[in-house]
Length: 292
Image 1 (cartoon, rainbow, N blue to C red):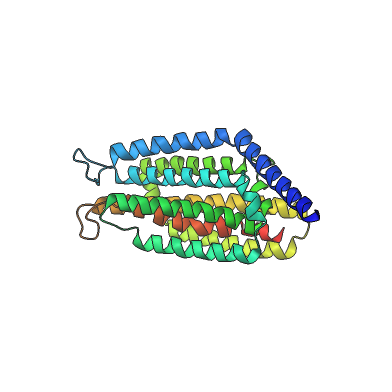
Image 2 (cartoon, rainbow, N blue to C red):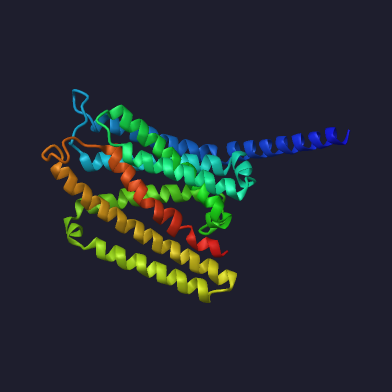
């Protein structure tokens, strides 16, 4: 009899968790997911229109534009995964998972993601896009795992709103578009040594993080310190965009004219950029929250 009651109690808890997650997903998140879905649809339409010629062959024309659209689509897909999981009942089960299982799953996903990075280059456009999509989904899922593993506090540092992920996703896309346009229309910026500034910023970030972690003990001051560190992360993000833009200009000039780049490989180009951002977003951006 006690076993039966215990079973009913667990069943009720399971139902309550499911209902709570269901309501949370469809009352707070629907508009956010629809917004990113619209961005994704527009991006797919632009890719379909501008990345192929009249014969349906992938073209070098609009190389930089097409790569940016792919990157925006990647951010939109990852944001939908991030927001959907973070606000659904699934996240409650992930949080209750043993720490060892957490680490094992994360390592497996990282290995799979690395293999995808190796095999994404393909002469078959459809295959390359499928591998790219799988890779982006895995990056989005590992983002959720990494965030939970580090700290729930990191999601609420810039705002008291539960919609922080929605805002961060839009900020990332907005910064990408705005600074991409600035880089495109102000040639002078191409002559700046962005590598030097990037190295200086990253080392400054690391030194500030170490010093702050040692000497700042008050939680209120620590939260303020972390916010400032996150703004520094945004500046580093802008520098990475600048470096990537200059790299795209060089590749656009070689595309179709060099044996190293006979045809554009937008999925691979995009995935390399997203993979490069991984450390900034999930090791630099969320790292300060470990101390909280």
